[in-house]
Amino acid sequence: MKGKNNVPLQEFCGFSASQMGYLLYEPFTSDSTIVFNESISPPMNSPVMIALTELIEGIPTDGVKATTKGNLPMAICRPVAAKLLEQTPERGRYRYEKFRNEEDLMPLLLVRLLLGIGGYLKKTKGRFNWTKKGRDFIGHSAGHCYLELFKLAASRFNWGYFDGYPDVPIIQQGFAYTLFLVQSYGDYPKPESFYTQLFLEAFPMGLMEIDDSDHREANARFESCYTVRSFDRFMEYFGLIESQLIPAEMGKAVALRKTHDLDGLVRFCIT
Image (cartoon, rainbow, N blue to C red; front, side):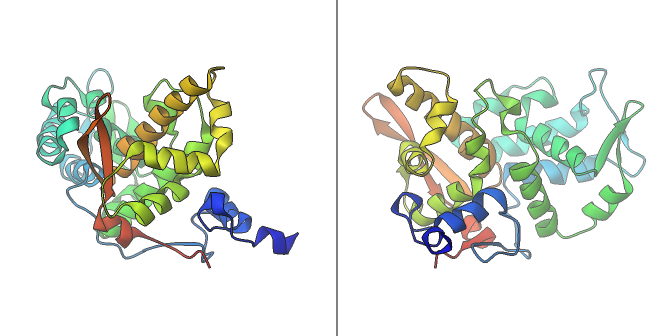
């Protein structure tokens, strides 16, 4: 049985069942299947790092007052929106041109929630304050902060928080395999559907998590959920992919290409 579990499998792009187990259940252990760069130089123009930088600058040691709705003040939101607008791909510009509060700036809200999950930032008595752990955290290098936020986003934050799709837990559970696919095939732009089909070859049970009896419709809904959660609101927010619109049979489609930061972040060892 041990020998069988170590056989490379075509549906896993050469990973064995044993190696895939590490990718799914223990991606941040010291196993050699996947290694994260602890000394990474992060993409400072990525949405996550833009938001983190403005939060560090905007929340002083004595904290900052929350709005009546409990959101971050506009004094922090405005510079984040302006910088996101400068750096965001054309297809995402509409997200930041007009906003009313923190909830309209999803990368900023994400980072604030991640800081809360990690115990770095808390809201008490109507004020946002850094905890002792948080003050230590922001004193570390940008690379350390980036990797810690990445780990929190990958393993502890619920990817379904921002959308109305079904749970489909395999999408988040398989985040490391998605990183591998984009790292392996992302030197040149490829449509999102290319990665969706490779992911489904490895995890066909994903379609079963979509509540739709029509296979074609279930496939389309899975692809939409997979691309929004894996690419739009995870890899793109961390600066690991670039996207562009390309001509397609039904108007336009999105093509993805990896950034050099993805290669700088993670390394995979199949054999």
